[in-house]
Amino acid sequence: MSDFTTLDIFQNLLLAARWTILLSLIAFVGGGIVAGILILLRMTKNSILSAFIRIYVEIFQGTPLLMQLFLAFFGLPLLGIEVGPWTAASLALTLFTSAYLCEIWSGCLNSVPKGQWEAAKTLGLNYYQSMVHVIIPQSIRVATAPTIGFSVQVVKGTALASIIGFVELTKAGTMLNNVTFEPFKVFAMVAILYFVICYPLTRYSKYLERKLNVSS
Image (cartoon, rainbow, N blue to C red; front, side, top):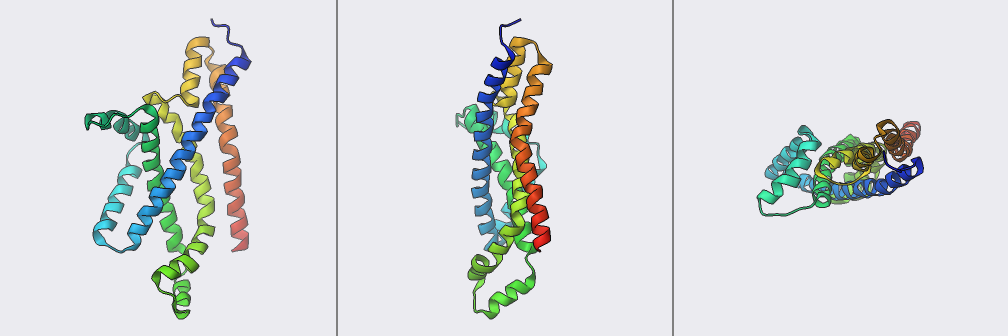
């Protein structure tokens, strides 16, 4: 048995939680940027680009995130690109996130009534002006709640990064358990910290859904 107190365990897990939050932010912001680029490419109506984006989304939605992490960490070195756990986890989670955000945001854009397009045309707006001034502002209102809701899945997905050696909350819990031999105490604290991170996002997402449903 070690001399780790309950407070020591909690403090170490709290430090590891910083990396969980940081990795989640990197994945979410990076995924959002990539998703935005994919949507812009899809708007060009180019059949080749549309096919590429469809395949991209299907691959990252149709394969386990764990497998994507393995491929990023072990596959890139086979191509001569050396990556550490940080880089591999950030890359895999960013691509994973971008595929889902691309579909969420595309669906929200398509949910805007066709009458809005016709109204924009009557005002003399071209396609891109209609998107910027009419369609996107309305779709953002629809997309906010599901986007925030998906961020919870991103946070929980960071736990899989422990498999490739990235020391975040789950990995830190495993390491502390190996030292203290108190799995119930350690992983109960891990679960509580995940709950503290995810619960506000879940509640805010539900609040936005109710608010937008009432306002619509």
